[in-house]
Image (tube, rainbow, N blue to C red; front, side, top):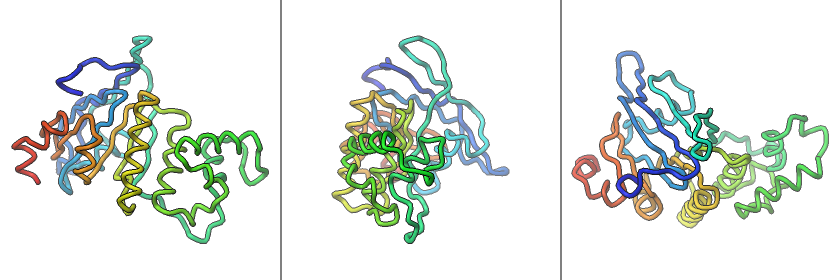
Length: 241
């Protein structure tokens, strides 16, 4: 957390001078963010502030200036960062027979999953789903999952193997309150268990206050950053919400 400790643990991710333009319109301007490992960093801002564009820039989906530097603190060397992404939603045809196993196996196997069901891979997937309380969903059709169940499955897929940076874009959109709280608890456990850097975009300010270690107030550029208390009590926040 800024102001508490400038040092990271196992690794360190820095987003440096990131900017995005669409034609002459400036969408993001000189964004600098230090994402600490073992912490949940949450990006907040009004609609049109550039939150989703920032995530797309980090993922390399839009042209941008600036760069991302990932440093392995144990070996003190810069490496290519491994990023995992859980989107706000995925488009699924309700009538499709694809199961959780099929989807998961297609992400981690080089062999077409429709050829056969591999017992070793099946057990591996089940054990990963178990971390998220979703092992009973393994044979369920993707189209039959609730919003909360789907997010658990997507989190399980995104964290195998464990990434350096996990990006979550409004991951609880359309999920009921209990499911939303469950999701934040899962994310909280992930950062602690794996010392993972997690970057999340959220509109749910009450849960941000409760779970975030660091909050970034974005309005095309970083307007304010710090602990939830520092950001929510700031004039910059009060002028925008």
